[in-house]
Length: 172
Ligand code: AMP
Image 1 (cartoon, rainbow, N blue to C red):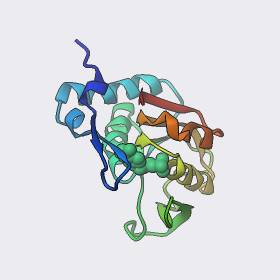
Image 2 (cartoon, rainbow, N blue to C red):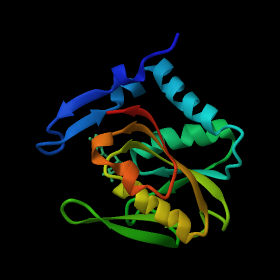
Image 3 (cartoon, helix red, strand yellow):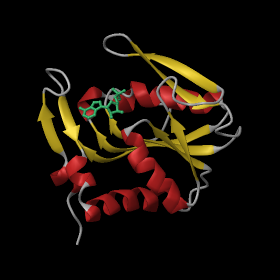
Image 4 (cartoon, protein in one colour):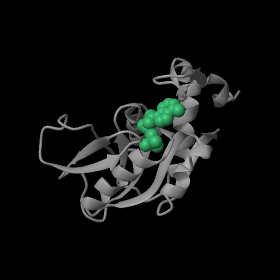
């Protein structure tokens, strides 16, 4: 039996600030069958592709990237918020609606020419994952695809990521 994953995404109005419709994935995460179905669907998509690693974005991207990498038998590369990674890093700063954000990746995380999929839970404006893709490219590696559990289509993240294939499992 398959679960309709969208039934397990809870909409929380005005979180964390007024006007945001927050997609709460915790009902899906607490459902073992649904969690397995979500990871397996990504694994089926990427099995047989010549991938070297799965890149996960802190923090909810880790929830999907690590089990996906495990299923594919390849490594998982964490992209983290500033000051969390202990060794030498590449860093990218990007604009938010108010202010800026920064992401980092270890300089030795990916070999030049490595092919990766970049994973996060939600594609909104695409700013976060675009910065993550930039980090991958600073290492000389190649973004095969970007993958998300949820895509908020009205925010047009897909257009911002026009350079890369985008895969999402649930669209709003
Ligand atoms: P963006 O850079 O605009 O694509 O934002 C993506 C990041 O913000 C992702 O890591 C998401 O986890 C988070 N995010 C943005 N909008 C939402 C939303 N409506 N519900 C849940 N998470 C969101």
